[in-house]
Length: 245
Image (cartoon, rainbow, N blue to C red; front, side, top):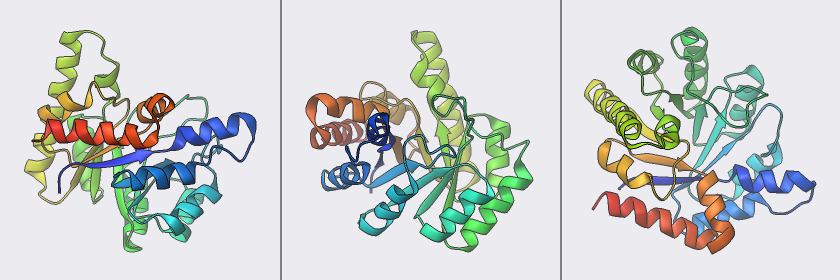
């Protein structure tokens, strides 16, 4: 299989929560993305429940036919929810209540022991764990030492670069990270996400051939406002296929 597209439907829930209405339903949006060819669905259940709600995750677990990736903080409350709902993947991410969205990778070095305990508990329950990390050598080494089955590279700095020298530098960081991870482990799953768009996903995949999964949400949902979810998913699948002929 080529690169898997996991669609993050958090921002469908953001629109719903803005008015407190039952619509638009992120679960129905996820099912539409699935029918359009997405390989999986990603949701971030945040501590403050600003968009995705517990009931959304429960409904997705019942109704999805593909894969459910639950992004969450490494807290006891969230671990209990994951063990109850049993997503296919848990991606551990940093979380600060005052942030607008996730602003960087986990502090895997400083929180290594605590993260390792969460990884062990979830993977003992047959839930694969991925860690959301910066393409930084120390962070990558620490991530592998936790035993997590996957590493998601934070692509935010690459996506935010508005000048070519900086964009190239960030791509080189990601390319080095991808090569290092694959050289160190033939089994760890390598994903990437944050700030990815139709315009920047192709160069990323060409520069980092080790990437196996992409998590894309905000830009895809934004595109869907104009073209619909089916067409937006199709456009990203085509961009991915075009980058990996």
